Length: 448
Ligand code: 5AD
Image (cartoon, rainbow, N blue to C red; front, top):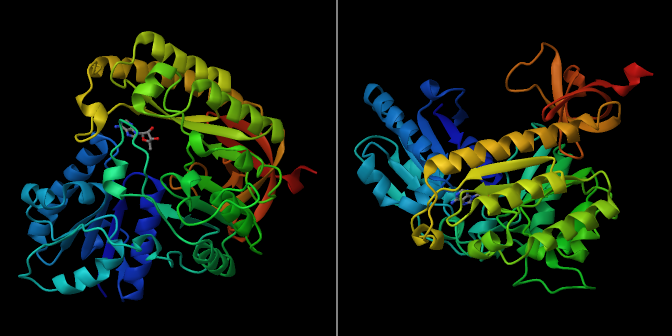
């Protein structure tokens, strides 16, 4: 049996696409390799958001090309955003690569590999747009394998944030129908999945071209309501929304839809209105804060995480300090902090005031320290509480023997002493200790 190994860079959408490709290849008779050395096919699912992410994947492929010299039958492929962005150019750089598949063509990988089987075939580059591709891959989780699953509800983004390459790599917004998403969620529930995370580059735009607003509810809110009604699903999350589309109908879902978890990842990007404007992010810092306030008014315990870019062209020290202040003021539970990376073809690439790398590094380190402090305080508040977790399994790196981990509804990881029978269970644990972002707990019953 031929074996495939998929290495994933970047966002959850990529993780989900990798799962989908793995499931499809399994269906077509492939096994899943445990390591690169053990594989007949190696696919790198790539990210283009920052140059560093691309460099990592390129470096990795350079290494794999050497491996191929010792193992000539080995097939190497790129998929994901860098494959889409660079296409044929990747082959010029790395002639040992056999397959380059764009973001709308992941479902063709098995066919392409079949075509490539054996030696002597020309490499395949397939990066065309494909209408309907957002709904091409549904089955991606082996039954009973995991209690959580990603469900892609829309693809692409029509916003034009000045820094962002995603509209070029993922294409225009396309949404699946509510019925189509529901069918997938029901199938996942039937196979034992208890928690779904609805994915899209901009989920708040879900369905806006195809589905009418009903009773003041956006298509995305209608989707959330429909998923909330699926028996067997216990928890719903989504990522990522845009502040512009985060309106009162969506805010009103918190505390109303019982399965919607007390957690929101809402990218703000900067705490300076001047920078937001230059970024072409059509909202103000005040509006962002109002959304968070309204959410907390409904659900005081809600965890708020965000994305921030430091070192956007023209960002002054004062702009940066406003971002620092925002992180403190909002008391973010976590910040995904990005060093601005110049992406060819984006409007920001040609802007004046590009910040030297050393300046970006300094701001990054400063904000990182602030954010760690804020997040640690947020974690410490949870010590002594009893919280529900969904047990996912063993951590990748063995922290302590006999520890499993699960996530709270507010999306914190909790390690606890457990065993196999806890896997996939919703369990109450008492939080005994917090360290940085991680919590440690004991099953509540043991504390009675
Ligand atoms: N440089 C740095 N970070 C970026 N992001 C997107 N484009 C860039 C870029 N050019 C970040 C944003 C986005 C997250 C997924 O990646 O913060 O929300």
